Image (cartoon, rainbow, N blue to C red; front, side, top):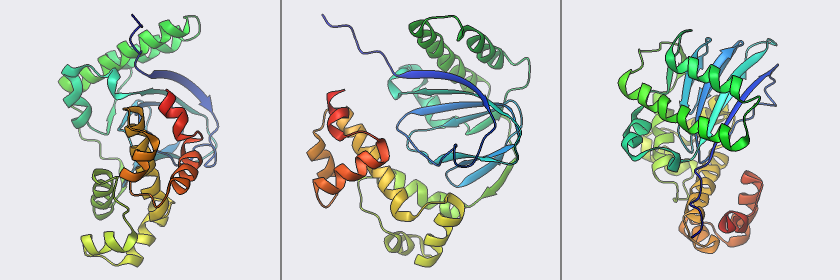
Length: 261
């Protein structure tokens, strides 16, 4: 009997002086928890930008566009956990869907102490042991979110509800070849407004954003057993060559590589 596949989860602790180029705008198919420990920065998650203070915990869901916005040249310290959906116990699946996007963990908070312990252990445990500790950390974080709902965090410095509605619609219809004009018509705004707000607030074009969403959706289909060719058809790409080129550009690997995994 083959051993069961281990859920994907990684833990990292880093300190550096950030640049806008190093912390690129991105999205992925995994969940991400980021604990901000030190620095001067804002963080963009889809249609909302937050001012960060030490102890802020960001909970970032799959296929969510996000990036750091450094405010000066001070050191940026954080812990980052990325994990696949199959890491989440069935009993906590609802928490992952409803948890607040941002909360603050003051010094002495039990969950923050657990982050500290995993940071310390990272230096001497094996890779498998760190993965086990990380899975325990994820479960503890979700339980904390379930029983200690986040207090309102009023540090959103920019929130565009119209943009948020558009982004939510794109996320709920990732297989559709959505274009700026179609989105403008659906949400009763002008095409120029849609194109402007994407460039100004996300730093990306509508076409680029939709393409990333569709490729990530296709990746999920492929990892769940659908052939790359059928995934490309399902996501309404004009031809496989276009799909393949976009896949490699966005994910830095081919659809066939993910199919073999």
